[in-house]
Length: 261
Image (cartoon, rainbow, N blue to C red; front, side, top):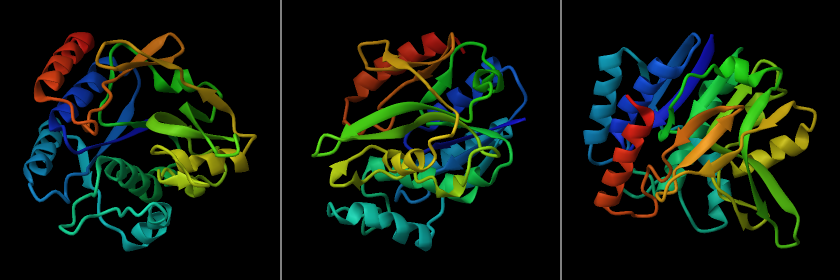
């Protein structure tokens, strides 16, 4: 049985859509665990709604909690650029670290300890056609979308983008050392997942398959390909770039048509 992990924060409606897309299109036995990442918001509406949706579908939901040991460890990657992880009122300081902390918490506490294949879906990733993740993995041990940033000296920083990845945790070496944080590498800013460059450098023999993706709408949504099967990334679901309410309304209408739920 494949284990699927995901989290939700700003868009509780995406929890409903992602659960429904998995029920309709995933053609294998799976266990879904959802993490509620809205616990630290001063407004509890999203937190309560995420829990309500999970309860409605009978899906296991856990809180992302503050772990001081983890916070101290990951703060070192933000300290150099003057950022913090949490603001004075206890909420996340920005959407980027909200994503990074949730994933690092999930990986450190749960995912890296699995003895089976795992899939991570970002909160705005959905299935849109029948697919079998286990068959898509084949004999590969890591499947991910690659990202690259260039150091000042011109050397690349190759890493795993956090949006969508599959891992055979039982087969990869030292999964507990995989670091999904963002921050910077040798002074160069990286996205969430940027720190995985070190794991890839340290373990060149891991069997890897890269997941191609391309934009499919004027909204910048993406289609990520596992062979000839596509997975949809809404993209900018946390609204980190401050798009208008009308923009997201039109984009969500496109999503609903694409998923055919």
